[in-house]
Each structure stands twice: as structure tokens, then as C-alpha cells.
Image 1 (cartoon, one colour):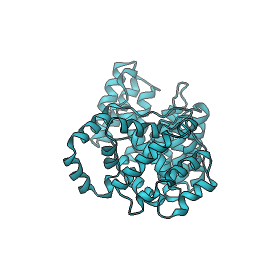
Image 2 (cartoon, helix red, strand yellow):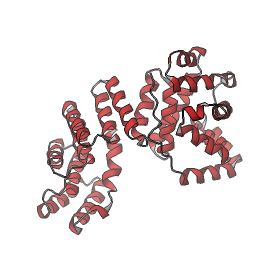
Image 3 (cartoon, one colour):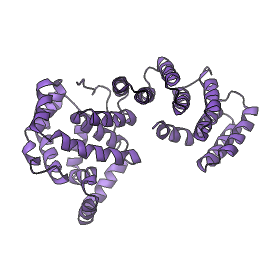
Image 4 (cartoon, one colour):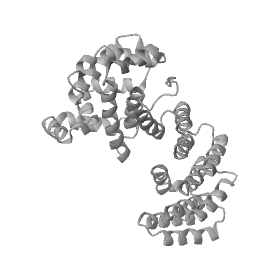
Length: 337
């Protein structure tokens, strides 16, 4: 899971950040070779450049990452240690070294690196995400969830914390937070393999949420205020899905939820970007297309047929997706059980 986060950050690192043309050229050439699996050639390019630019952060990052891809963890860790010892080491430096330790199953060393990084960058949601993943790999799921939640608190627009928590809550019988965090993740990270995975999780967790009457009632009886408000509103319309949870019934239920939520004090008492997004989709006339796309894992061929019959709405929804940025405000974190 770490590599999914690191690869884009390293492979497409903005060349404007390089102060020396030689470093930029070496980085570009090495990454081209690494993407094609030519790790030895990529490392040779980096080593040659390092002779001319010793202790260069960009080259050390490349060195550590490529060696991690090559599974030469000894050299990856050595380069990562040099990287974090630089006076201008950034949060990515700690991520890279921590990932090298994790890839080599040295979880305690990885935890130490992430914790050290967080001390230097206490607002790094990225490092909390990595810390949580390593804690989970080290069989500490409760601490992992706490780290991911902390990551959302300090920076709620980083997708990975939502991704991990949507999966965590799915397997720990908390479908309400799995669907909330899962849908937020999908709106932040809309076009990736992880998106498809969480779409599947989202549909399954909506089924779990309405599997029995007791599930919503537990949130109403024992939940924190925001949980109670959401669960109480959903419970008003649970009969809509009594005949089965599918894209059509969820579209109807979620539409009624929005009407009720925004016609009550809840919208002012508990502002929530996800619900604002759904209202925005509704006002744009693409809410049904969004729901069909969101729950397409129910029946992919059925979705294809629906899309063909509603091509205009699908096109408008596609334009909306590509042009609208989803960013969660800092003050919209709600405590929950």
C-alpha cells in the first residue's frame, strides 16, 4: 500500500524544484528507466550524478526509492538515512525511509521514523497515513485507526486516511463511518484503482447499514451527536430500501436524506462537505448519474445500459467530475465511537 502513495510523488516530482540542470536530467533519465524496470541502469545514472552533487536530496530520494523497487533494502535504507539527516529534510524524506523499512518488514524501525517525522512535521497527514499503515502491518489495528483519524483531523483533504478507514470500519462492523469515509475518499480520489475498490466497499456497507433495524438504532442510542443526527435522518427513510439495496433504492433514499437534512437544523449544526457535495450534484442535475456510477458494482452491465440510455446526463456528470475539486474544510471533523 505504501508504493501507491510514493510512486506518483517521486516519478512526477516537479522539475522546477531542481536547482541544478544536471540533477534534473539525471532524475528524468533515471525515472524513465525505473518505470521500464531497468533499475540497475537507473541507479547507475543516479550514482554518477551523486558524484557531482553529493548529499542532494532529490538524488537521495531517487536512490532510496529505486532501491526499494529493486528490493535492495540495505541500500534503500542507507540512502534514506542520509536523506533524513539533511538539515532541509522534508516530510517525503521520512515517508521514503519509513517505506523502505516497512518493505523489509522492519516495522519497529519504520514506526520510529514516522514518529520522528511527525515530530518535525506535526501537520503531516501523509505521515499519519503511513504510520497507521505500518501499525496495521504490525498487528496494531486500534492504534492504526487512531493514526488515520488523527491524519483526517489535521488535514481532511488527504485521501489515503479515508481509504484505510473505510476498509477498517468495514471489517470492524461500523458501516456508517465506512460509507461516510468511503464516499469522501471517492470524491477526493476519483480516478484510481483504489476508487474502484472503495466503490465495492461502499455498496456492501450500505447493505450492512440496512441489514437489520438494530444497526441504525445503535448509532441513534449510543452514538456521538453527529452520528445520531445522520442515523436518525437515514432511519426516517429506511423503508425505501426494504425491498432491497440497489442503485435505484439508494438514489431515492439518499435524495430524501438530502431534502430532510437541509430542511432541518442539522445542516447548520453539523456542516459536512460530503452532504454539500451531494446537494451540489443534485442542483446540477447529475445526482442520479452520480449514484448510478457510485454503485455500479451492483451490476456493471446494468450501469452500462443505464449510461447508454441517459448519455446526456452521463456526459454532464463526467464534465462535473473533471472540473470540480472536492476539498474538506478543516473544521468539519466530528468525534465518533
